[in-house]
Image 1 (cartoon, rainbow, N blue to C red):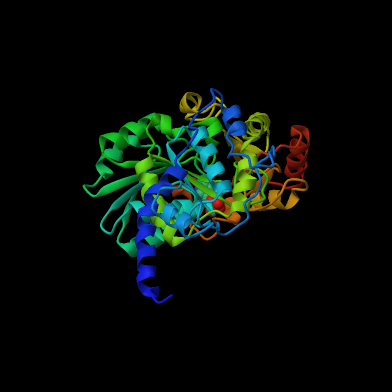
Image 2 (cartoon, rainbow, N blue to C red):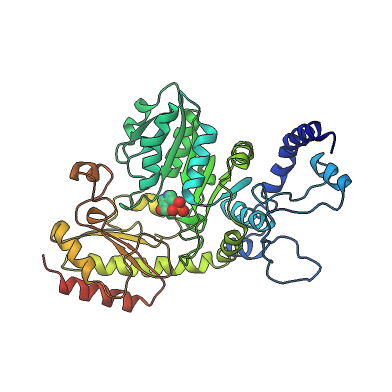
Length: 423
Ligand SMILES: *Cc1c(COP(=O)(O)O)cnc(C)c1O
């Protein structure tokens, strides 16, 4: 104990070299090991213990013990590859990351406590004071807040690009532009961005392309194929798919993930091992769930399109979607999100929501339960009509996250709600 202070210094020193080792842990060990998505989602697993358990056990521990000083020394000297502290790495988190790397076709990943932790940690790692970020107007509300309210605190400026006018994107690029952050399909307007175009645009302008792939999930589209450098997820949505836990994920280029890991390891947005266990298990059913979400959503969209109470419907796999060709090119199916305009404006939208009986009114999406929301009277009520229009939210827009209930029961609930609200 008499060498206490110098010992602490040398531990801090060792901690620094330890960084290089842990990046190996977060690299996707089994990137697309099997030919098919479902198999990678089910068969990517951490090593079993001596108990030979079939399902991966939960490692609910904050730290990992060393047998002796020699093992601790060897670990910090990178001679042994092992877990130390769960803010850095944990076997459950590693399994979840490995699976997501396999499913997105990415080199490496880092798991976070929420989707917003993934978004913020990525921005905070990659952007410096004086850098400029390009994004699109219709992005997730909290991402919009981070970009417009908080990044300016750190002298990081941003410009929004118009989704429907890609011709003017080039003139918005500045010499200090570093990142292009996009989301497709968008929330809640279900608009699309051509990923092939975005990938080529980012490459030409030397921008780091980050895609929030929350609505599509890797089952429907894999942005890395189109040149995305990083892909971000709110695992809270379809990856869990059952409305149980919060989580986030960043996967992509190993050099960028290493920087994000280095930043996050000290700043602490890490995912809890329990949530990682839940999410990794959820991924085993992602393919079947997304198939069914897409099937229900398409039937719902077709039914809505023929409904007298409905002004318009937007769903990527309806031929009436303005970007249907892009949808077919880059998405396996249209996904679980549908939006439509109810006849009668804001007040009718409010009444419609009040008349819903079975479906849930809740601030989430990507659940087994169908969720109905009316952004203009709820989540986006504080915006002016103009601001709402700029983000693609009409006053009469109703957003539905089609669940996995029987489609006839979903339609019956909406039908009675149309009947009990009047325009
Ligand atoms: C929900 C959501 C997020 C944020 O994720 P949280 O897990 O709620 O922090 C980010 N992007 C999109 C598109 C989302 O829907």
